[in-house]
Amino acid sequence: MFYICYYSLIVIALILSAFLFKKGYKQFLFIILVLVATLLTEIIARIILTHRLKGFFVNPYIFNLIEYSLFSMYYLTVCQNHQLKPWVKFSIPAFIIFGLYVSFFVDHFDKFPVLNIDIEGFLLFIIYTHLLFNLDEEEIRVIYKHPDFWISIGIMIFFGWAFVFFGLYPILHHLDPYKAFIEYSRVLQPLNIILYNCIIIGLICSIRTRKYSTQ
Image 1 (cartoon, rainbow, N blue to C red):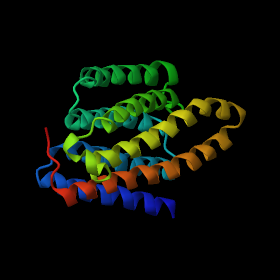
Image 2: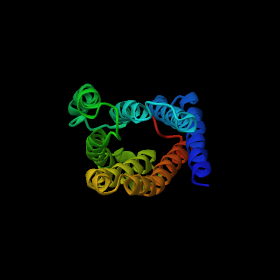
Image 3: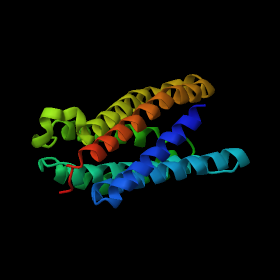
């Protein structure tokens, strides 16, 4: 039941963001790419598990780098405050290099990319907190109708909790790998629902107002 709801939310968000992109809101290209990457990652994971193929953990390592880069690019496109932008631009290649180093030389693609996800969560939480407090001043009176209010809230909740959980994951995995994986699913499932619901609400707000423009 969860996966039906989960995939449905991703598809709905993809349709809405594609509609907005077609209408000229170019910033939503990065949301489209995140959603497509998410779907492909999930499909590949299902195929690997179904056919018991090797290399299951390569999938999340690659997705981790793509996800951080695209969410950062979305921030760079929509945020009007330029104070943090140079650091975010620098963080994209820096995170990719760091992530590749951890993947090849530390984790060797043989377990969940806990460290990479923790760093990603920490950085995105800071980035989207900054975006939340620097929304378009013209729309500040109706902040709950601003698309980036909801997108920021969704990302902050998801990656904030993910950062906390994955900080504890190595301890749980050491005590009991199977139970750690079960807890991983229990924590991530509701967070995914919250994230994609928030993205959908943000996209609907953008469609309704038609006042949101690229920079």
